[in-house]
Image (cartoon, rainbow, N blue to C red; front, side, top):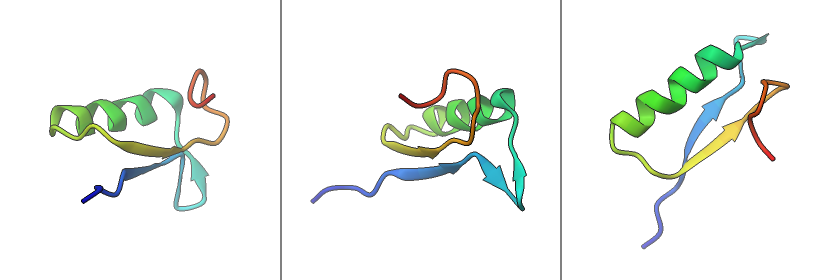
Amino acid sequence: MANNPTKIQGIIDGRRVSTQKLLYNIYDKINEGLTEFEVEASGQHNIGG
């Protein structure tokens, strides 16, 4: 059974999240043991591809 990836938002409450804060959010999820993410970035530097 496949797991649904965790969603990490690049915009929260209508405001763009800084690149640093978005990376901290990703690192927090990694430290929780999660390995699959769906990052909805919005112009953050070096995110996506």
